[in-house]
Length: 143
Image 1: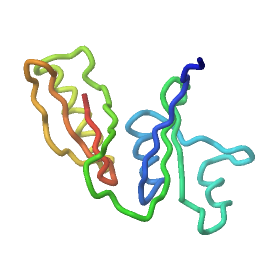
Image 2: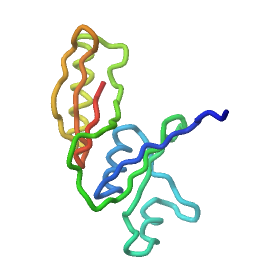
Image 3: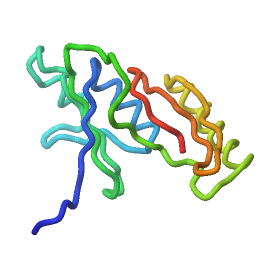
């Protein structure tokens, strides 16, 4: 039986390139270059007008992280995500030290267009995390 070796996480969104650029900044990812083009923007401009901006991807330059794919859909987000990303910035930290790391990263991401939703304080089972939204309202957690 073959095992899964790579995954891609796909986002439905209104503005794929905008959302992809946001996640590149969050994760240190890059927009992939397409064969025959120097930049993603050069490739996108070469597409027929109706296809420009209809999809985008971002990849981990080290090759170890999952590829993120963003595709344009006509409908907007209505309900809570059924799947979300946890951006792990507080791994191994506890208490005030963990909160400080979460708050610091939250400030950076808000400056990029993210929205802070709420702090989920530590309890007997889990450490604190911050619920956030990306530039199109997709929830993710700083954990």
